[in-house]
Length: 146
Image (cartoon, rainbow, N blue to C red; front, side):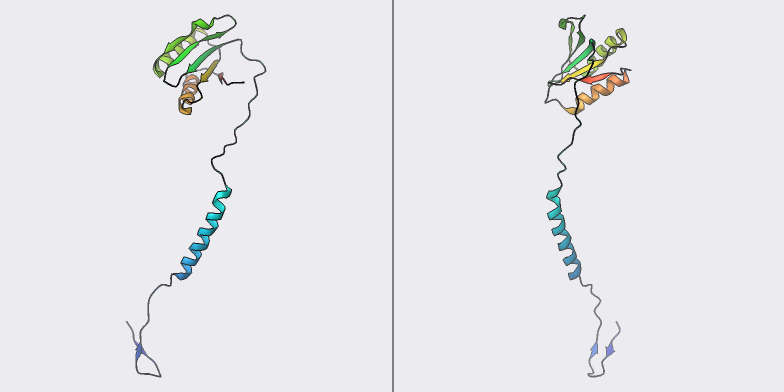
C-alpha cells in the first residue's frame, strides 16, 4: 500500500479501500416501504369469471356424466326418449372412458353434459372434458344449478 506523507506533519497517511453501504441501506429501506404500501392495493385472489346464460336451445338427448367426490361416476343417456334408469355406475376413470367411448360410438352426434359435486377437484372435471374431446365429442357442456 502506498504511503503519502503530508506537508504539515511527518506522519504518513494511508488510503482506506472500503465501500460505504449507508446510502444503499437507505435506498433499500425506501423501496421496502413502497412495496409494503403498494402490496395491499392489489388482490391476486379475486378472479373475474365470465357470466354464462342458459342455453337457448338445450339438447333433447344427451350423454350425462355425473362425477362424485368419492371417485365414482354415473354415465347414461338422458332425454325425452330415454329413462333415467339407463345410467351405469363406474368405479374409476378408465371404466368411465370405456363406457363413454361405447356410448359415443352408438350415438356419434349426441352431446355430453358433465355434472359434478361442488367440492370435487377442478382437475377431475377438466380431465373428463379433455378425454371427451380426445374421443371426438365436439359438444361438451357443464351442468349447473339454476
